[in-house]
Amino acid sequence: MKFLDQAKVFIKSGGGGAGCVSFRREKYVEYGGPNGGDGGRGGDVWAEAVEGLNTLIDYRYQQHYKAKRGGHGMGKERTGAGGDDAVLKLPVGTQIFEEDQETLIADLTEVGQRVLLAEGGNGGWGNTRFKSSTNQAPRRANPGEEGEERWIWLRLKLIADAGLLGLPNAGKSTFLSVVTAATPKIADYPFTTLNPGLGVVD
Image 1: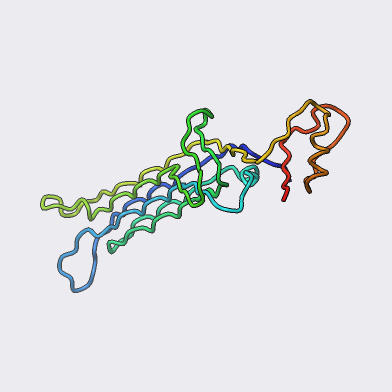
Image 2: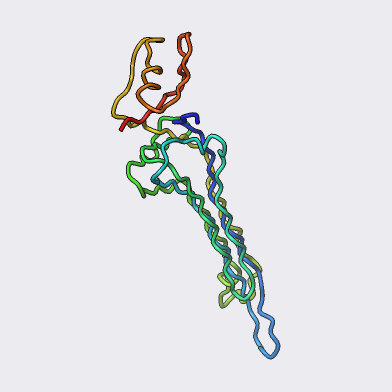
């Protein structure tokens, strides 16, 4: 498996659901009135540090993460369902940067740490919210608020007890392959190793 310590990811939070224009119509009820519900709130995008991960390989093949949109409001003053959140599960030691690769958003240093990356949009108001003594049958409702979207960079800080440095073809990968169970590429030309090789020694 290729070791991966940097990835670019697109995130988008969910938009809010639209409010509903609806009026109460029931038999034997003399006075109707507006009863449109509000739209549901869109889902957020979170980053969470979890145990058991040591590479960003998952974000090499899936680069788009979108939270669900909120449900639309309905009649009988029913509010739309809230959208599900999207959670990026990351190894401890991951730094999250803006697209310029310099502005640090968050640094995940311990298991269970959660950071809000993009907030979901609010749901729109239904026509029940607009009724008043002067406007008893409002025919307006708000659309939901749009979610946020942007590209971010994920960068994993390497944490090791020892590092091997040396000239090309000095035998670093050979030493690593003998001392540990790692299987780095070994060949008789310089710069054979282009990605960091990881080995574990008990």
